[in-house]
Length: 342
Image (tube, rainbow, N blue to C red):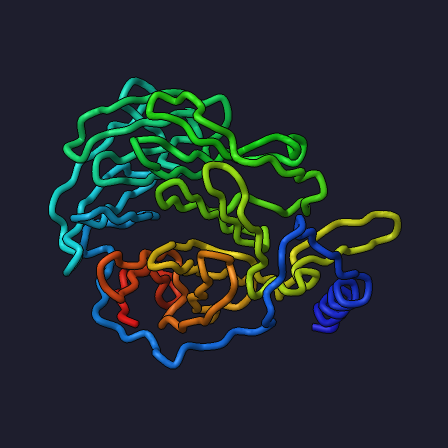
């Protein structure tokens, strides 16, 4: 018991006394005018919830909205389900064959859908594949780098975000492609050589010719129009991003670690009705159950909502004042659909 106490004491002193705060780089972003959340007087009202297991979904899933359906994709099982938007019942399904051949995938890293096509990215095979909503192949092509996120843009184009690496930090990693994989244009280049080593790609959403990017560990929201950056704005929790990282010093060695109190930009987000709805992410707070709202025109913070549990995915309804989330419930983090009105 005494030995365990000494070990705990030494570890505590090591972290608290021999660590320094390290400033994360903002890449010339504009900070928010407020440092803390302001909660909306109009609270979220739960309309209904549905366990994903009742829909036959047991593995990690993501979803997108079209005019007629919500489309839910199981990344590992390669099953695509079309849900009725009013009650989330399954209307139809199709399955992509697993393999390395034509019209096959190993793993769905990302997907998106328009009213015409549904597109998938496999970062194992370095492949993009497009189907129509009857499951017929539209096209498939290979990529030279690992795809991380994609959006369907107008005229069956694709905005494609590649995984970026520190040793290639000065290269462009975001492109607009046509449906055959040819580059229409590259997005504005930024120098990421000063980016913190914990940086990881974020998430993208496309509205016509406008693309929004919200970082994963990167503390900002960006807006681009046809590849040219309009703004880069810090998120509300990263007003002082130095709290996210610590540098641990032991003798002559130094190592960087995430702070137990680290808070990052987003798990997921959506852009509708002139606003950006962001799910923030906390490294150590299991009750960090918020949706933050920003103005899409300039990235300025507006207000926040509280959800019942920690949300993981979000979609804001196009034609009504409602939000659909996938939330992690109880100790087992069972995924549940929840529809809120606001």
